[in-house]
Image (cartoon, rainbow, N blue to C red; front, side, top):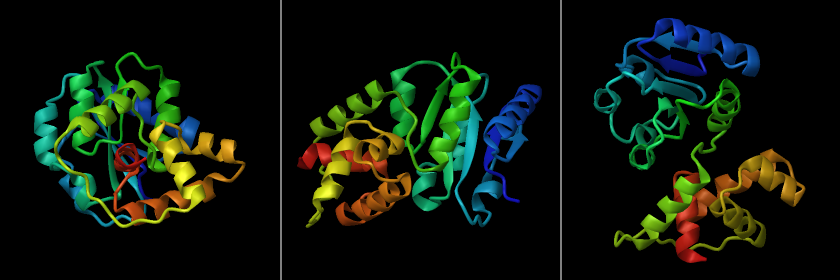
Amino acid sequence: METDVHIVSPRNLQSKLMASFLQRTTGLKCACSTDSDLSPVVDKKHDRAFLILFDCLGSDLGKFWIGLGVGVNSRHNKCLIALFNASPHRKLEYEAINRGVRGIFLDNDPPDVLAKGLPAILKGELWFSRETLVECLLREEDSKKPLRQTDTSLTLRQTEILIMVASGLRNPEIAERLCISQHTVKAHLHNIYGKIDVPNRFQAAIWASKNF
């Protein structure tokens, strides 16, 4: 059975306790490592998405970026990255988003936040504060760097969903508001990404802020 979450931390006991908690509460299969060089894990063929959960506390994050590679999500879209034990600094959050990280868990987050956030990331959602995402959208809007423009014809329902994504709503919230299943939401998002030529939810939200 493939591993769902690879916990990378210099604190072996803490990571094993975390792995036990996550497996018990979420059913995710976890593995622990004290080595930040995860090239064998990243380069291995995977049938489904898996998550690398990196411990920021007492670890060399710069070395981790170099070892894992910038933009790993763009060249291996089954490998997702999240950070935990992070200090609440916007600069770190912006850098993480730019590097394709899917979520950040702060050093004062309770365990149940991890139990809720990790499955959401594995389902394709982002796990950042709404304030950070909004500010990133505004920064991108003010940037002179042009977004890729496409000749697109979104349906009314796709437009509705894209606006909700840009507003920070997650898939369960969108499904509830539209009285449709989460599977249907995911199918719509897949089609939306193809039409507007973006790789993920965050870039779709940026596209929406530029075009609506």
